Image (tube, rainbow, N blue to C red; front, side, top):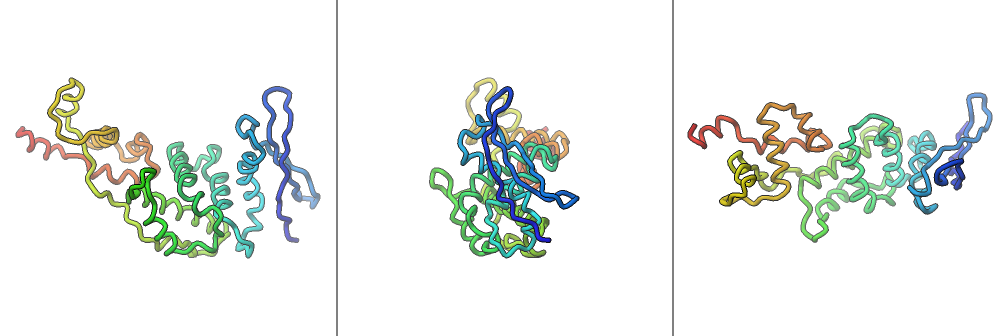
Length: 267
């Protein structure tokens, strides 16, 4: 017997104390074959002031409830539904699959880059060359080209989405269109790292530093010092809030070995 597609119903409900809440209601068949009513709280009206925002928040639950109907479904599944399902099942703090840093970074890239441009596109309509062309054209807010490292992260997270669809049997095995998307993640220049003498000069407000120093210079310097002191790369990744070891990879390009530092200072 085929399962019905659950559109669900959203209502605003009172609580004995605190703000009103949005409730999502649906019906499902229990183990005895009876149709039963279910209710889940989406959030408060303070979190989602309008019904439209509440529906958006409830979409992940709705897609999750209809997950079994999406197995190799002929019905077009938009990328936004795939994102909501992935966020609900994998990026929720309750699942424990990822660290807080990973969840924060993934959510940012999904909402900043992938959802706005691909949310309405059907899952089966995404093509390798279209994604590759899209990545080439991405720009920063000031109009400049987006860094290859950032494009590489976007590509990787997009690939994770399609692997999630395959794992949920929404796509056939081997149907990830991002697999063959070509996108370099290599930095165009070596990050600037401050040496100990330069850090002391800044602390003592002395001039004479010729390097271009910004906030990321201190990040690179901090990670460099951690690696030079023998900290585990996974620990460095967590401290620097990198989502994966791939993101932490450039840390190895910055550190100056102790032998090289000794040779440079003549010690």
